[in-house]
Image 1: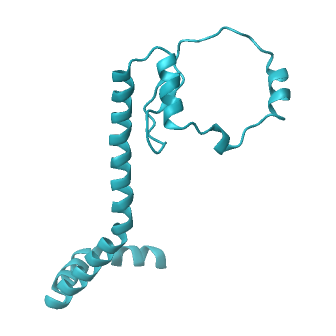
Image 2: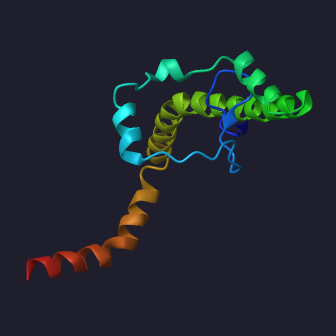
Length: 134
């Protein structure tokens, strides 16, 4: 177990499984699956409170400074995620405002921009109609 980089929890340092094995025990896969199917934990049973995660890291030999650094990185990423989520909630409003702006501009210019656009695209649109009709 080591400090992780997944900010999925509410607070505290995230945990991850490192590459260095803690123990070297081999178990038959079929036997493991047989035992496991009756002892599966529910998702809420796998949650660890922040203090417990900190204690695990301390017992693994990590210093308070290393744990604090991991916590700060996770907190920063959590804040960024909350800001993204808040932005997504308002993006619908921004899209609607943009459409209204385009409609107002179209009304104010009496559709001049749209007419120029249609005129420019007309040869390509007419060509497609003729190809489809034959």
